[in-house]
Image (cartoon, rainbow, N blue to C red):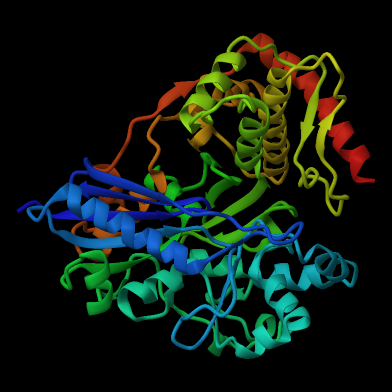
Length: 498
């Protein structure tokens, strides 16, 4: 018998499951996608039951690949954070999951900022106010969907929703719970003051436990659906970005991680710190590692922008059979390989505007688009726009006195033959990257192993599961060109924000 650990990555677009042996070698993996619903402009919802069914399907696929001779000792989840599920007391959803991509609360958040509420919320929760996060979405439900709000007995994150489906126990970890903006970041407990601002008490929320602690065993119902043994332990996982940082060994200050999924998020590890000590446009969150916190900033939905570009610019309307995602990326990457820096003077700003400009207007898109621009110019402009946002955020971190030694890059951008070099050239930093794609699941598996007693510490798990990176440095000539281009980018972003 070969003991194994299962890491589940519950993303915005799909759930992935990766089965590891105790040395960190992959034994099986599976993936199941689910749709994002946009019933009204600016809304972005998902069906929690579809997410659960994807988890069930992925686990069954992994078990079928692994066979009975490879029992799963423990599993943990690396979950998308910032989404909220209104549910009954037993966890049954009463409304679609409102995801972090949702912007229905934009007007409400602007009102709160104008009234000075953001300072209070950030001081307590560590987080700035953003449309799409649970704090404003719960308030929106209370105001505009009072029947739903009255019916709701629990407000759940993705992590505690799925922990309960697997074990019958509502349990969240601090790294995922903090993004609900209802945790007091100084105490690690639900904040009665923050809860009261949106009409709740902490009784509406799941039990908080550290990442890496055992939640419980598989229930008979979950076992029947997934095929998991009742002997398998469910260990508390955490925020997918924090699980990725853990897998890379980013526990201590110095290196900074850029996660390039649907959302682009910049994250660095810090020791005990307060919101007064970090850049004003960054958030303070609990790490999944004990006695560590993270500072982070959402840079934009650049992964979603690339997906839009692929479907709108690279999919042929005349084709009898639509190109597969792999074929689209092949055409995309081939064209970018022959493109030039600067994209013929075309700029791209995040569709909601630059997040580096405080309280700016939500304006973005292609700037300077002409008839002679091609789809390749547009594609590269998206890549360069993401890199400019990264550099701007890094400068803010450094101005706050926090060292940035090098940049770890994970996610979709690492598979591009062009994008990582653009990131190095624009940022001017050395970059560590790997083609390995399953960092969140890897971090979850390390937590599972530590919680089950397989590893004596998280550091032992990190050492066993280590994936060697590839090093990439900036090109001096391109870096000089992009420094000048970056000035133009900032000026344009600030002008549009007025």
